[in-house]
Image (cartoon, rainbow, N blue to C red; front, side):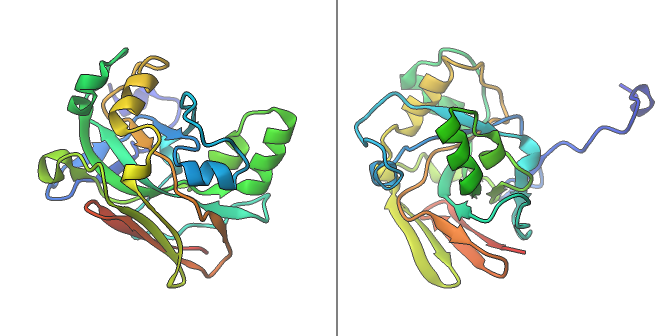
Length: 231
C-alpha cells in the first residue's frame, strides 16, 4: 500500500527492542490484569480471594520505551506507579488451552502501569470505565523484551521498584493469583489474541504517588530493569 493512499501520514508502528536482536517487536494491543496480587488487592480495599481475572487496556502508543522520561500527565494531582512483569505474545488465538498457553509467549519485559489514581477513583465511584485513569499518553513505560528462548518462562523472581533510591514495592512472581498460562487462556476467551499483544500481569503492594523530579527504578529478577524520570 502506497503512503499517498492515506489522507494524512499514518502514525509510526509502536515497537519495543528485543534483547540480543536487531529486529523490533511490533506492539498490537496492551492488556492489563487488575488486582493480580493478593496484597495489592487488600491495599486497594478489595477481597483477595481468587475471583475470575478482569482486564483493562492501554493503547499501543501509550508505551514509553527504555531510556525515555515519563511526562507528568494533565488533569491529575495523584499519579501512581505500578511495577509489573510484561508478557509479549508471539502467537495469537482464541480459546487457547492453558496447557499450551506458554507456547504463545515470545518473551518477557518489565513495565510500569502508570495511573491517574484520582481519576480512576472517581470513575470507580461512578461505575464508569477506567480509560481516563489508565490509558493516557505515556502511561505504559516498558523495557526491552527478553526472548523466552533465552530465559525460559519465569515463575518466581522478585518484582521491585525504588523511587529516588528508596524501595517502595517488592513482591514475587510466585505470588501472582492468576499465573501466566491461566491469564493467557482466560484472556483468549474474551478476545482473539494476536502476535504483538502485551499483557501487564499485575502489581504487588506498595503502589504510591510520584511527582516531577522523581526517579523510578524497578525490575523483575531474571528478566530486566527499567528506569524513568518523572518530568
